[in-house]
Length: 290
Image (cartoon, rainbow, N blue to C red; front, side, top):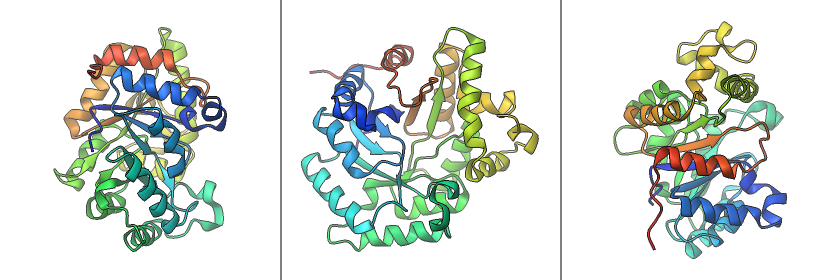
């Protein structure tokens, strides 16, 4: 499965309003034309959310980034995966994750064990999901080990190039590593910094992300009040085109095979098509031939 060098991570491409009105399909076709290799659907999508985008395109890979294992049964996911991949071979990647306790509430128990149980269900389904066609949202060493042993690799979210370096060491050389990378495209530096901090602050309230930042050496002071300048700058590139190119290159040099770029705006449900066009130009993406 060819993800290309750069993909787009987005929520708006799977919202009911954008899908029903056809805007999501139209936008997916444009992303393919711009040269992006993959679309990663945020907001805990199911397999079914990939279908309209796959039908609207011919080459680009569509991935769930990520499907919450608490919201779906393995047999159901496996059956839908089989149907989608039969119609669109080598173009759908199943991203799985354990989400967060605050979102799952009382169902959230022993997340690593729950992930292994879910993977067992995919393996034992009537139409199993091959390990090569699934990735895990992995931050800590134990989930990264599960991604190495039971999946094609890992899709870490809200990470620094240093995390990518450590993840590559844990995954080994032959597993996919596709980190999500946040950028703000805004000519006003102060406004861009504010957009970045406003976006990051909500994630720092979630233990999974806060603990990962601590593993990377950040302190409770760095996590307070929306995040220190150093922390925010380490997970969001907002200082212009050169900074965006350098950040993506840093993840690639640290071991990323593919980067899933999330362009941050003040409206999380917006599909920032103008910024995606700018990003393609910044990165010099080659438009597909034919």
